Amino acid sequence: MRILITGATGFIGSHLAERLAADGHLVIGLDSFTDYYAPALKEGNARILAEKGINILRLDLAQDALDEAAQNADVIFHLAAQPGLSPLPFATYIRNNLIATQRLLEAARQNKNLRLFANISTSSVYGADAQGPETSEPRPTSDYGVTKLAAEQLAMAYHRTGKLPACSFRLFSVYGPRERPDKMYPKLIRALLTDSSFPLFAGSEKHLRSYTFVGDVARGLANAISQMETCAGEIFNMGNDTAITTGQAIEIVENIVGKKVKLEHLPPRPGDQSATHANIAKARRLLGFAPSTSPQEGLRKTVEWAKAEWEGELRTKK
Figure 1 (cartoon, one colour):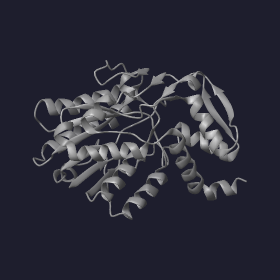
Figure 2 (cartoon, one colour):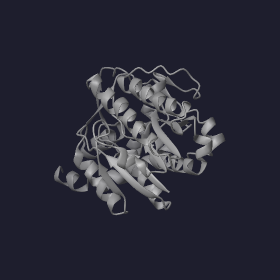
Figure 3 (tube, one colour):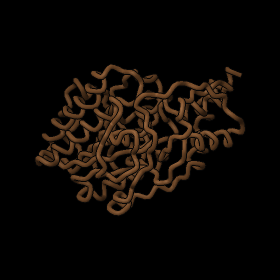
């Protein structure tokens, strides 16, 4: 099957591309290599994918012609987005989350052989408390969550009006090797390995999180291909239904590394979620989704990856 993945050189996208290629699919990646974080990291992911026969199209969804990229795909996984709670201009979120999605949908609807448009959304659409089923009222508290909800509903509107078959997956706190450097675990692991301070937002140590290992997410999304008729028209939570606090997560990483982290206490972060506990009953029932990686196992793999990836850099700092 021919599969197009947007945001393919990002964290989750690169893992999904590898998984689908290993399953025997013809995978085409698409990425704009924005400078939200160091483009060199995505270039490294692109090299990894190229070694596995995955071609990457360098296109900006918000401005470049997309018809050719979308016209031959059997399935499109749309992961490209503007993430984060950092104070970016609202127009940036509108451009990269909403306008980009609308332009991709318009290109995809011209493909009469498209079997599924899988939009990748986020638990941030629920807002501060993300613990209920998919029918819970979305109450986003960040520009990111607001625009991702709008993009999700746009994709579902295309499905409801018969323009193309679509579904959406709301992901919960995904972590693992290649995670963005602005996220909690890369910052924490780097602080421990370099004996530097880790920024902790006030109250965040009590936040409940469904930390979900990226391998489980990639497997869950890949399995959806064999159940496209079941997926079409549906929204699914996809996460780990075993939740821990951020404080517990920090302790797990400290135990793996074998030392305590130095904390830099900061004011609360606007728009942050106080609780995410993925209710995945629907995904379990309809898709057989079953995350199996414990926080201890997943974080150990993440620390091992970080040590290997940053070996040269860490050596120069000693």
